[in-house]
Structures are given as structure tokens and as C-alpha cells.
Length: 545
Ligand code: ISL
Ligand code: CA
Image (cartoon, rainbow, N blue to C red; front, side):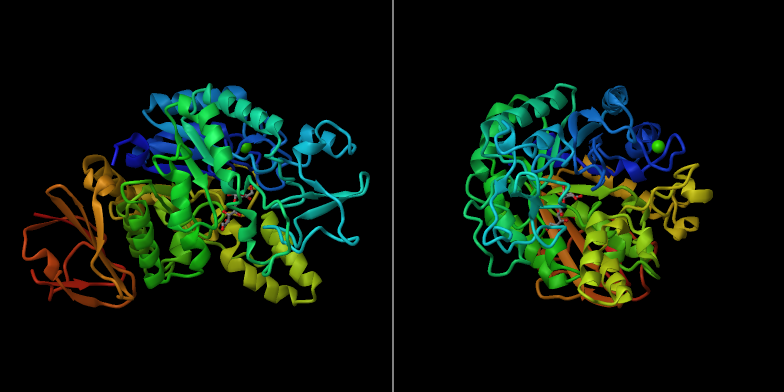
């Protein structure tokens, strides 16, 4: 497999509004990020992925853009972005930005024009349809609302939105739209950024018949429609191929087979992708399903395309809460999950705060939640007559705000995130879980991440090694090898609260072994050369010779 920097990289996601507030308005900002760049550098990350910071009414935290050429005031200004790019580069890191081009804000001048009259030249920049029998054109749902169709009184038609009604979808069939998007992309790439994380990029092409869905709740009709690969190949031809960049597509509803069509090295589309098989299929940890997903993607992409590894981001509940144990074994399980993400095939992503084992939140009051997806859903369910308390309880575990609370820097007020009133409440456990504390403690989750990331820098086997699962069918243990030329690594994980005794894998024979990284500090008494005694959430990386 061809070697490239973005395969070897570790990406650190900065959700800037919750990262660090430099001016006391309660909202994180780019100046705040600038002041913490050394922290990210010292962690060992190579690439920063910055969530959208373009001009926006901010209904969906920046994913509703009203001017692609401007910077949101809350985040900073154009000079700050330029300084950020240059400082990141000075530190030997790279920075990729969010590209949100499936939809714009309903306040974008293009949309304001489009909705102004049926014969406006921009009418066709969005998707407009007549009513069908005085109702919505079909029975679909959107991600955030009961219907993706919003009635426009003035012009008497519906417009289409895959997300909130404030986020109308662009009409990618229109060549002018595509050309304008390519101009925007060049504008940012020419500022020196190192690539894009492309928001729901497989949604650009629509199912043109807009036929009723059998199951409106299975939103997969929104993505992977005919024409999508032509758009991405055109985007590559027009823009991407002229730059040494990294492109990662956010691509829901794909199996490895479909995924390869986006990231196959012979396809001239994207470099890598976020698929959502883990996040969508596993509400909680499911060992067998997880292993199956890893195997299918490894075999499906092997030698042909590149995967990404992540267990959380700004849309998904923090991994230690959702997939680990955020109580008694918080530190152990945070380290175990980190080991997984960084030793499985694909580029690993860290979502800010994950590196100190931050946990999800559980606010008592719906008013403390800020997320439009959750608020809309709450309103819908309560409107249907469900008990507000129950609705809140049902929505809490997967609320996107679980991962959006401010980064916990120290024990001072508001976790040291802001001198003002934070835009979203700080997780009260900051008095225990915070960066300052983690830096002091040599056994902390943070120090474990540093070691794990450093290993990747020195060992290509972690990046390019073949993968072999030695633990298929086991519900608690995940044991696999990565092998590159003469080097074999064995990764041993006990994803459970039980003690598991396991024989040294027969397949590997008796060999010299070196324990490279470990989340415990001494062996159990009955551990021997031929038998491993694995304690709750124990995780080991061996090099064997
Ligand atoms: O689980 C998912 C996919 O099956 C979703 O989280 C999906 O990734 C998501 O809803 C799409 O997210 C992206 O686009 C949204 C924005 O609200 C999210 O923050 C962004 O990550 C609309 O732009
Ligand atoms: Ca601020």
C-alpha cells in the first residue's frame, strides 16, 4: 500500500466553541485554540480537524453557513484563521477544515434569492417541489425534523432539507452551484489549509423520483444516490488533485463495498471516510458486532482504500461513557478504547477531551441542552403526547451535547474553560477530570495517549501492518495481531469487568515478547509465560519476535 502522511497521521478534532475561550464571552474561539496549540503538539497529534467556523446564524453550531468566505464572529476573524494556519504549520502540524456543502443556512443570500420568487435565477440552486395532493411531496423524514419538506408561503412550493428547516439542501445538479463550491474550496486551500473533512458528502446527489419510502425512519434514501460519484470525481478533477491534501468524507449508510467506491485509490474521489456502522449499529458496546465490522472493513479495503478509526466525535456520546465504563474503570477503559482506535487499521481520530477520559453529561433540564437535533426531537415527541420526563430520559444517553461540554482544563471555575458564562454547562466532574491533573499524574489517560501516539510515529507496523483477529466469537476478549514484514504486534484487550485467563495464542508459538504499552502496572500473581491473566479492561500491546 502506498505510504502517505495522512495514513500515518493522528488527527485531533477541535470543536472550537468548547475548546478554550480567550475573551470571556463564554464561547471557545480560534484565539483560544491558538493559545493551546502546544498542548495538541505535545500530545503528538499531526493534524487538527477544525469544526466549521464560517459565518453562520449558528442554528446547528456552524453547520448552517451563510457566508463561506467569512469567519463567524464568535470564532474570530480571517486574520486569526490565517495566523492559526501558519502557527499550526510552524509547529509541524497540519490543519483540515470542515466543508459543509450539502446545504447552506436559510439565511445565505443564495437561499434568500432562491426563495424570493419562482423565476429568480437562483431558484434552481435549491430543491423546490410542488405539493402533492396538498401535502408534502413524499413521506420521508429528515435527520432533525418529521419531514424534509418545508412549505414556502410566498412562492407556494416546498423546499428540501436533509437536516433542520434552517438548512436547505443545495441542488448539486446545477452546474453553477458546483462551480461556486469549487471556487470556495480553492479559496480555502489557497490559504494553505491541508484538506477537508467533508460533511455528509454522500448526500449531495438526491434520489430524483422522491418516491415514498417503505420505512421513512431508515434515512438511507438520503445518501448514495446515482450521480454522487460523478460529482466527487468532478470535484477531484476540478480542485482536489491540485493540492497535497487529505480528504475525509463523512459518509453515513455505507458498507465496505459502497465505501470503496468513495475511497478506492483508483477512484479519484476521496482519501478516506468516516463510516457509521459502529455508531449506528452499536448503541452500547457489542463485541461481536464490533469485530465483525472491523473484519469486513479490513478485508473490503485491504490494499485498495483507507479507513478511519473513531468511537466518538461532536455528534456522538463520549466513548468512555458509551463504549467503556465511566465509573470504577474510567481510566482503564479509556485507555483500552484508545488502544483499539490507534492499533486497528486506519487513521485514528481523537475528539478533544477524549485524551483525558472526559465523560458524557446528564442534564436534569431540557433547557440545559443546546443541540437542535435533541430539542427538535423532544418537541416532536412531547407534541405527540409522550411524558416530557420520559422523553428527556430517552434522549439523554445519545444526545449530541454529551460530547459538546467544554474541555476541562483545571479545577478553577468553569474548568478553566472561560472567565464568563459558558454557552453550555461544564460537566461537574471537572474537579476530578481535568488536563492539569492528568499532566501531573504519570499514569493518567493523557500520558497513555502520548505514549500510544509516540508508538505510531516509530512503528510502521501500527499503520501498515496486516490485521488478524485471533479472538473471533469471544464476547469479552479482543486479541489481534498486526504484522509488517518481520515485525508482529499482538494486541490483547479485555473489554469487561471480569478477570479473564487466556493462554498465549497457539498460533504465535512460544516467542520472545516485549510489552510495549500497558494500562496496568504489575502482573497478576498467577501470570505466566503461557498464560495471561487479564484484569478488568486490561489492555496490552506486545511486540513479538
Ligand atoms: O450518526 C450519524 C450518521 O448516521 C450522524 O451523526 C451523522 O453523522 C450526522 O447527523 C451528520 O452530521 C454532520 O452534519 C450535520 C451536523 O449537524 C453534524 O454536526 C455534522 O457532523 C448537518 O450538517
Ligand atoms: Ca470567546
